[in-house]
Length: 331
Ligand SMILES: NC(=O)c1ccc[n+]([C@@H]2O[C@H](COP(=O)([O-])OP(=O)(O)OC[C@H]3O[C@@H](n4cnc5c(N)ncnc54)[C@H](O)[C@@H]3O)[C@@H](O)[C@H]2O)c1
Image (tube, rainbow, N blue to C red; front, side, top):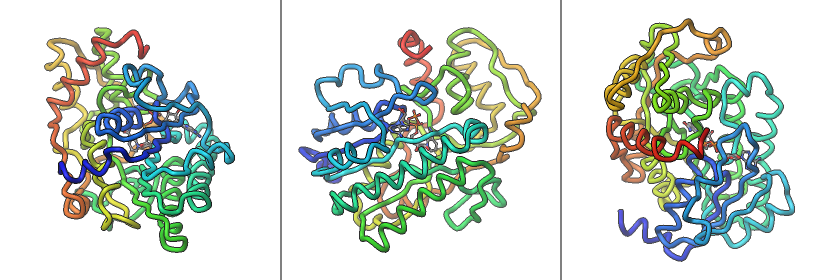
């Protein structure tokens, strides 16, 4: 692993969405590994971008404020980059149903802008794209592996699936060196916790710190898996450094599957107090809910040597501690 991570020392690395949750954690880690990091972020208020996410790193990396769809600016930014990590995007499933065109712009047009910029100005860059488990829709079998049918249940899932397909196409036809990772629920420091528009779990952290009850939709029996953000950052680094991953699409998956009710109880216990209440599923959420989901990530583990290292309890404790300390910057 150390050899693999050594490949980042002194390397130029570009992170789109680098002030958001996963992008900022990745940018910090790349800087720690000695990479020359540039991040791009549009800082739209409804997304997860937050200047505090790069607190302490302002002098150690370059931050560019702007939109992925600004093609001339993007052309300049991709030039000379050895690694391109694509984390920018519209992430909320609910928002994708309320404003499908904004999701289309961000997740399809933005994606094509990036690939076209690389094709024209930096075709040898190693590109890693972040896709989502949402491309599978409601699982018909568990754990979900990459051979599972693709049947997204919301607009975001459809656009993320198209995004992956662009990457695979640009690899096959134009020789771009791309890999897509289908992330499962990711949590940890620097996630958006202001409200539940991106993921209920972020909002649960806020509610716990504020000593308010967690809301569990329905009976809470739905099972999910979760990855702590440091493990996802490792996966992105492993993917970019693995030449046998080029042109491929892989699942990431958590260390264990838990029901949402179990998750709420664990969080309350770790917090040393708190409560939850079961509430009816809001209809707009019920319509796009996927039921139980947990992934098999064995293909990616074999291809790259990655495996998640942070267990759920440990990750939840670390995240809770982060928001107790830094709440003033997140809501
Ligand atoms: N967090 C999860 O649980 C999860 C799960 C599955 C997939 N993903 C994927 O991981 C990626 C990162 O997600 P995140 O949780 O860090 O989200 P986030 O909202 O915290 O970060 C995304 C960042 O991208 C920026 N951005 C959006 N559109 C942009 C544009 N057109 N130009 C420039 N910047 C733009 C936003 O301002 C934001 O800072 C996304 O592609 C998402 O689909 C995340």
